[in-house]
Length: 221
Ligand SMILES: O=C(CO)[C@@H](O)[C@H](O)COP(=O)(O)O
Image (cartoon, rainbow, N blue to C red; front, side, top):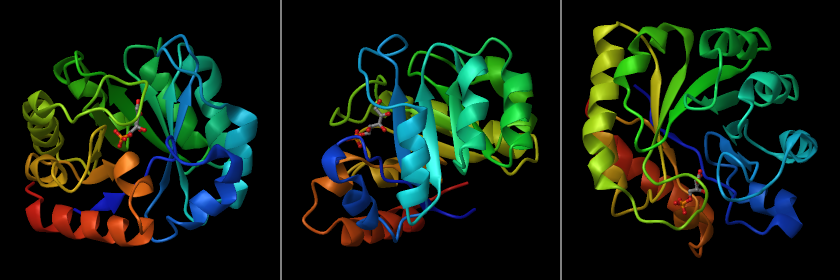
């Protein structure tokens, strides 16, 4: 299973997105947090800005939609050219139909779980998605501490994917840094969102590479 590093631009300088994206040219995806101030208590950016980010980014865009109506909006992010579009299980009315629509636009489909949402009710959906995002903070803000209480859920998700014989990525998001990434990789995550760890580093490119090496050495399927 490949290790992927997907830095979140949430805590980057939004007045210079092209420059901030250039810093992560060595990453696998640029993780873009779309927040609507309803599903989460924060407001970031929407479709027109993501369209511009897709054009400016040196790597594919991984759009994480923290919005109340993904059934209405998620396919448009795939159509806009995002390489991966993740919607929340708690918000989607028809997750299977939505995942199929995203995939039919040529993007990978991701299913995100808030910390309180278990994976078990969604095991039958695994064949319909390309990635499960296990949130390791309450979604809404960067810079929060990694919830180690999510480690068993990461492991259960990885085991469910393996038991189903699927090639579904397991992503973690929130508080991922040099001091937490190995625990997450050891629990079975292979895709890592890191926001402040990358953008607060003196050398963002070097931090991406350090995180990749740490995860690579600790990954356990
Ligand atoms: O989705 C979110 C927050 O809701 C994340 O993508 C954060 O942007 C990650 O930031 P750090 O915890 O790595 O600082």
